[in-house]
Image (cartoon, rainbow, N blue to C red; front, side, top):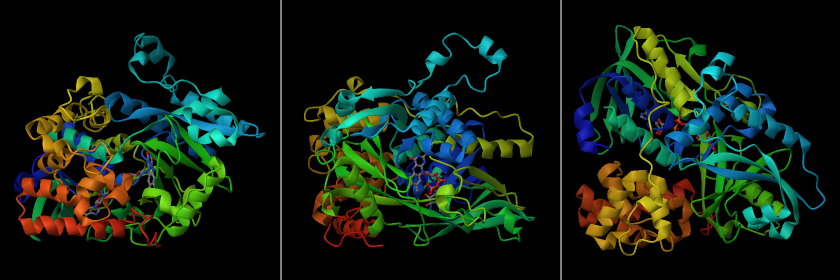
Length: 562
Ligand SMILES: Cc1cc2nc3c(=O)[nH]c(=O)nc-3n(C[C@H](O)[C@H](O)[C@H](O)COP(=O)(O)OP(=O)(O)OC[C@H]3O[C@@H](n4cnc5c(N)ncnc54)[C@H](O)[C@@H]3O)c2cc1C
């Protein structure tokens, strides 16, 4: 990624064909799609990349088994095809995980789940929806080149316990096993942005769009304020795309629009908890956990921890800093304790976070669980396009839908290429050469997170072995990653590194409670960004307040507050 200074220079006062507002997965996808079709593209993000919902998801790239209940078949099918494509395009970053639906004690397997899984299997196949002619002309190894999940199956007690040791005390009888995929949502966004830049897009964070500019009643660019200097700048563009997720209805062109032209967001909050793997050992598999009233939550292995989530409740609080609600934490812990026979409490949590879904309100007073996850593209009379709703999994489709509209508007011949553009470059841990002191766990994590670019992190450690130190005791994230974050990923604060370049802020919150613990990160950032000693101290000192505002550490004495 370009440095911020360079990106600002290339954007401020300049003209692009497309300007994208919002650096979550949707905006990143639009930037990649448009740039790879030959458009000149600028992307502006108010805070840090993925700071909104795209760092706060359940980290699943999935079809969404539960949407089958609502007969959202089109959505599930689309997401399942995207899931398959993502594993192919980013094999280092999007990986299949076995998911179990266990039957405990005398319980019988729920046949309705079995029926749903049969549908899920059928919908996941790339054969569905192809005409006979297409099937006949498909090359024999065509499908073999895609990752394709095995069909769901039933596994016996022993296999259940091997996959999910946390169920040892619960006498599981058997379980349905099916596959879905997992990722690191922020790294997905950064990877897509990196690809967009390869195609010429220029992206800048810390740049809040404050105004849409008009030319003869048409949206013709935006004005933004650069965070460090507080200065206003303009960028002119033929097309303006609003990809601000849950904030989408706040960016309105100034001319009058029909009310039905503008999306109305009905925010819904989802809380997640992180536990030490020793307290709830998930092994290599995830589990669907009943959570009362027909609802279910997930317990997932993630970065060597156990991730539990999520809730789904209408939310009218601060959408910029949604915090895990106290009753949501309790609800999730109760469900986990009842299912696994544990007695885990708030003090056992190693992290927590909450996110707000950009659900589109249809004016229907139904609860958010029933509102569709469908993405919607709106075009207001100024020509500004707003794309919101949807899922992390379906970012590519959302981007395609948006850029298809631009292409159609201009009558260009510019087909979408994103189904063929690899996201980053794959590397397996065994492809990487570890400098002394860097262990296998760190190597595996670096390969997952950066793919081939992990070599840059390792080169830094070779140059300066002190950078091979872990950021948090016992975790495989290396100090060199803070340097990489500042040098190549536009990170500007300790929070950028702890919450979004690494995920330590939610994976090891108690170990990073005070400023002294994060001082080495501030020092690495300072060395790259030219901070004074005083500034380094100030930035380290700022972290505990950020952590408190985000509610990442419910185990700290105060506990989560609504
Ligand atoms: C609890 C929860 C769990 C989820 N789990 C999953 C899952 O497992 N799998 C899945 O597929 N999906 C999941 N989702 C959905 C998915 O996370 C979202 O659909 C997706 O991340 C939305 O991305 P986005 O880019 O549209 O929005 P965001 O990521 O919110 O991005 C919008 C960006 O716009 C920026 N912005 C706002 N205003 C301005 C401005 N004026 N100027 C410049 N920038 C601005 C914001 O700072 C933000 O970064 C989940 C969502 C939630 C809340």
